[in-house]
Length: 400
Image 1: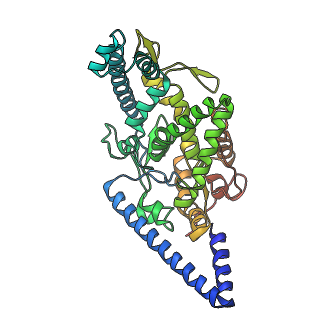
Image 2: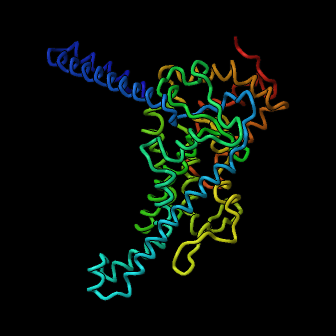
């Protein structure tokens, strides 16, 4: 991005040196640049106001470890998701019963009671009894909101959990994102769910962008695409958002962790009313139709299978690294911060940590249980393995 801007400025300057027309074009270009900077300033002010409300959800930092081990809030988060799932099916079932009541009536009664034709009532019932309807209602309760702020993500940031410490956020001046204010002001806290540590933004991605993946997948299926082709169409869309509004364009970061959480969200929504395969394991449907209405599948333990199978180290951006822009020196600054502060934290928290074990763990996260979720490789990754070891095994001394 920065190379393009420099090239564009150089081009405009050459035009300006040429003639009067060129000078006029340069004035217009400079005016546009000033307007762009003004808009950026306004955007950052908005971010500052948003950050003061506690709703922070753009990027996250797992390089800096919490000074105290985080409590595992996985079960409590699952309880919340289960509650929203029950609310969703309760609302859908009420609609199903209302539309069922329209079917036996004759046309005169239907018109009087506000019912549609029998064909339309049947079509509506078919939709309400589909996975699409359930996914939509669950999304409205957990994933709806103006990106990147979602119902589920905001709950994660503001809820008073039963166990503590539940969240950790690095201080402003120790943030790895200091050169990039939009990230520093809106960084999401790290949480611990089922032993995996990641930013609360990943829960927002799972329920919001995961539903976007689901819609793209279903649209592609209707176009005749195979499940594999439909999945890849959703993945490619996600990669595009990381290059744009959810990543490089706004935050200066292309996050593989975001892509993994998007993909996990796709599988979550697909598995609400049908079996899904996660690696070698088959996950049963969470819901089933009984007498025409939705009910919880009694053969599954929701506390164990509703959310837990989708939570993993794929969401941890220190283990599943992102690509940082060079613009404003962000990439160099992140590497310097990791070397100065994070390396010692990791060696203190994980005695016996080796470069090989870290590399092996990160390599395993390039696929989501054997599936391609859109992981993008880079020679510019910043990891504990390539930053904190002087050679194949020896830790480096922290810079001062």
